[in-house]
Length: 178
Image (cartoon, rainbow, N blue to C red; front, side, top):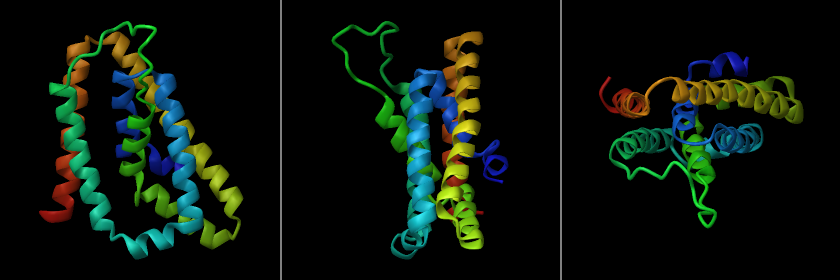
């Protein structure tokens, strides 16, 4: 159920876009860690999150971050293709944070919370939901990596930026306009 809900979801597309900019291995690792944490939050404390932080704030922050990531892709400084041995920076935490914020309160997290309530088996639901998220988003990351190698970098960059900006505007539009 979680895998089907995640197919074509904004976070799968986010993973796709991030994999066009960063190593698919790093993106998959960051998404896997964020998914494990997110599904744990859904299983054990999703109800508390909704009680203390209104969903509109989480969704508003997600929309703004999507737009910022899109603009960052367009206007951000290009990194050298080959990193030097002394360059220890990793995009892991950027990917982890972007995915975490985008997925908070999403349908897969809500579905995980509902499955836990229905079946009363938190570990099994967490394991299944986490595995589903990792598999579906790994496919998205690998597709992003493949697209990056197949299509000119400038085109991928502009399409990725446009996707982020469109999702940001869409998210904010659903909250405040539509």
